[in-house]
Length: 128
Image (cartoon, rainbow, N blue to C red; front, side, top):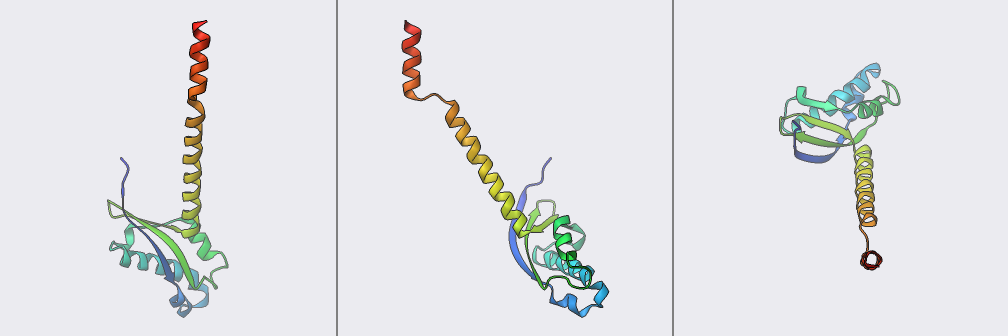
């Protein structure tokens, strides 16, 4: 049973408040700010927000003391209230891959179907 997406949005989340935390706690505070922001804007509980591991790695990329000042994310709210949060760049790459795959599938189906000339040749050769 798969959950359908109810709401999909792209947000730029400001993480400036993380600078107010002690230096060694800034990345942890930034991750918490992402969770709070998404819960507030997607109207759900903080416990139901799932942060993608790549997004977490991006926040911690420069260490605990220097998280990014802002971050662009893609959020998808499912019908059960769970919200998935990914890096926007990852979302764009996924969409491009899906588009390429569908194009390849269309091309394959077009090449598999014989053209009218090939059909005529097949019928003529079968008559002989």
